Length: 116
Image 1 (spheres, one colour):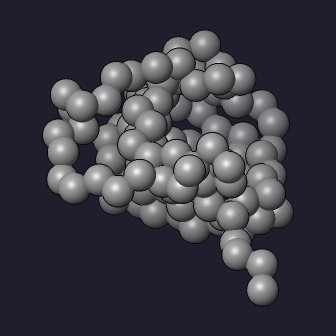
Image 2: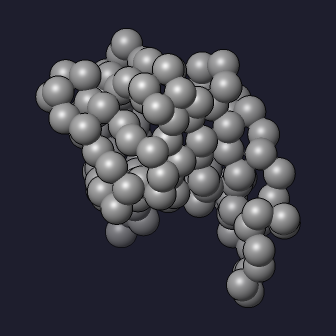
């Protein structure tokens, strides 16, 4: 089944925070929509203060992220990203590793490009 049709709802009360499968301890998500067939999803991610990753990430899907609260530090580039920062990553684009010294909340949209 593709992503569900949803009219405006209050995400604070309609969705529960749950641990992100396969992620570091404490990383939580509110999955707003998900297509189990393709893996496409839209979610809010929450990273606790003090969490760090040590690997560079590469995905086989498009990923768009928008920082809502807190900050994210790219350890490789030595750059800090704040609320309002946005990234759009095509499949295969390396990113990270990251440090989250004060916590971070972001909107993430993942999708696979349609093949023609």
